[in-house]
Length: 454
Picture 1 (cartoon, rainbow, N blue to C red):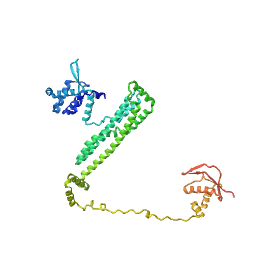
Picture 2: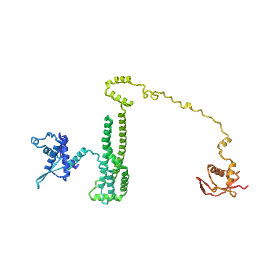
Picture 3: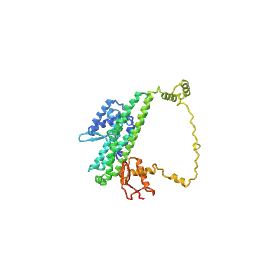
Picture 4: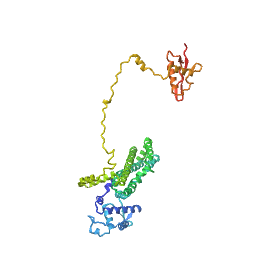
């Protein structure tokens, strides 16, 4: 608010002046020479600058409300300079040692002139703001022993400016869609797409963030750097103490880190929205091209032209419909086809009426229940005994030594163990804790089968 308090009331009269455009152009010319001459100009140099400007563009300076007859006798350059001095856009400083009058630009006026330059510039999208700048600032803050909170503020300012540039691009997308619909020729659409959209959107900040200054490459490094700073409490305390010693108690380190992280989340969200808008614009461009290329031969294009004509002449709508009906060619396959004819949809059948009646079963006796629960084995008792006999060596079948080649062999081994546990079985398993065996994809205990002694 300090600069706002310094602004005189007459400062805002520039925006109400009839010569507003001339004064703004004069301020831009003076500011350009002002920067070139190390921010110091004499009154004579300012008048010469304004004379050169007037010679190039031939301005017609109109009379202001507070201009006197004496002011009207001055040259246009002197009138412009005197008005800017009276309004407070420029300031006069007398150097009594050299007897020279110097012209300077006050701080509050410099802010407004900078805004005029941005509005007058063709490249107003802040393309000089890069993700690398934020990354480099945070890296310097993390590794420089002399770092202060000011570096974090710089990173936050760049993050916000990048967010603002992306948001401005999103807000300006609607004008490109409007211009696209205004084009009535194929060449006009190409010119609008290549000269306007590609130059304003693709090749500026959006293009940079997707290629050399790729946001997603630096995002993870920046997030990692912010996390390391946040976890290093000793470093944060040291930075806070150094800033306090320098008299900087304005911001807290953790608060600035939170704002930067939030800014990066917003950037990612806006880039995703830009991707969606870019896809929508490209799709709309292709659709518009197809419409213009086939507008006079395609049925849909002709129908659209007819509807447009009816909307332009609502009082003749009934007459247009009547004439259209007389001239319609009903033999076209696009109009008369199987797909165009209405087919009555079959009614949906009642689901309940299609249900079969429930089958009722009688009560089962004990034998029926045992028969249903009995294990249906694929192999007979004889086959299991032959399996054990064929794999016996010295009256012992060692499961760890046999080869299980397929599922049938594995199932026989399981059934052999089940058979050995029965009372009427001819074989038994030696009582021991066998180790587990893994062979050919099967895992089973190393059981040892022997014949029972009668």
